[in-house]
Length: 358
Ligand code: FA5
Image (cartoon, rainbow, N blue to C red; front, side):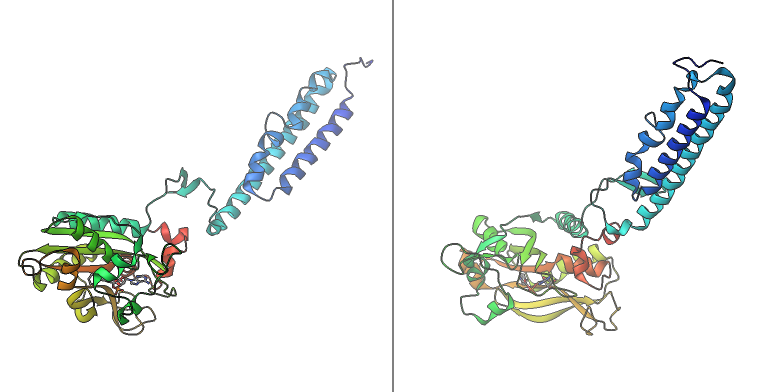
């Protein structure tokens, strides 16, 4: 048969198919990530692939050769598709194995064996703070907020810790370069919010004040430089240490469940008298002694005591008429003990393998 302008030599088309096939297989084999492979879908197995484009030339081949070339083309397309799928599962597997690299741009997660859109979740410390707020609200307390940047007066002076008082050493402070040196600081505890509440509201007062605190503490198994506390304050007539002990017992058992083993130990805080520290048996070692509890078997969760009359004087409340108690518990420490984490620093590592467990 004489070849018209439009007619293509079958052998030429077969060669073109072979070249296109090898090109596509090479492109697929060179992909190193699933994202790269997916971005080449249209060019390799989709509408714009070389093989699909060659299919349109079949009509220019003499009729008697079309069937044979059609088969070559179909085989080539199947081969590319098969290779693409194989590569896809290989790269998906690699992506899954490398999952702990925590690709934060990743939007899909494999949950219950299918890929779903990730909606994120609350950090365990936020969750604990909200749970604690609920517990106290159910006990009739309100929730109050206070500033993270404080003045020396609220953070120390009004709490009966004058300048040069040795107790200042208990709170190694970040000062801000603002105003007179060492007058503006990142609050070292939530206790200054007590002062703000007592200056704003008249007793009776039943409130909790959660929030972030900052100390120049070297991070270790149970300390961070930025951490969270929940402060409690009750001021009413006839309040005694028994009310304080009962309140702490109620909220800690609501948070941990009834099986904690706890004790109140005498302690010193300039703003409460008498003062105590609340400790529980270390949940990492069940009290045997470990690195987390410095081999003591006990973990301190917070400080507490009866509001010192000096504090009432500073805010203009008459200690002859009113009495009260206060406490300050570490929320990160509560979370650490609830989930038996041997190192508090794990909470700020942003390791999704840990965070997804909550
Ligand atoms: C105080 O901060 C007092 N303001 C508590 C208080 C309030 C006593 C009201 C009396 C009345 P202390 O420094 O011990 O106390 O801290 C209380 C709790 O905060 C600790 O038991 C611990 O759970 C937590 N905490 C303290 N420092 C850190 C830190 N660097 N990292 C993590 N948690 C901490």
